Image 1 (cartoon, one colour):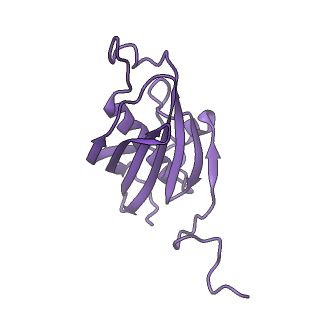
Image 2 (cartoon, helix red, strand yellow):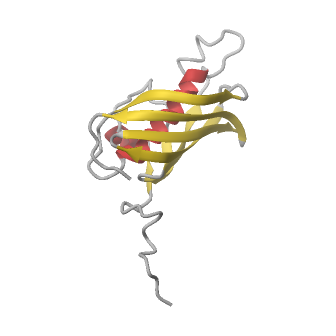
Image 3 (cartoon, one colour):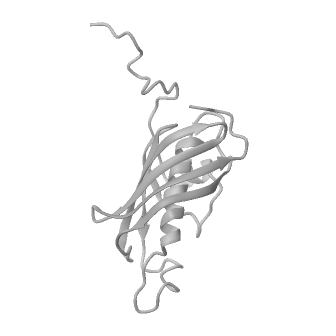
Length: 165
């Protein structure tokens, strides 16, 4: 049996390789630093297509101390930030983009479905819908205990990233 196309190129993406990144490796690709880094591990990245991972929500996270006393939960906009940071990795891991910045330019269709509580794992799944002329459109979801907590789509602009898919 022969293939008419290279089986290692997915959806025409010439950068078809998968990656995993720990926190130190994530910091090499993007500019957010603790305590504002909203992910601990990127478990599955297909550059130009998707990025998935998680954040371990320890009881002593800075935002649990102020949001809210007696009812600590992860602020919704930090959940959105976590998805945005993870989504950006799918572009920043493309060749030539390591260490560059992406800026959230819009967030749409945000749906907060349930609280995100301390001592849980916040799982993050994101996908690139398009990336043209430096503007990426993503969709993503956040889950805890395999239940969806957040759904959204967003746009992010780059600081001169030169790869279009």
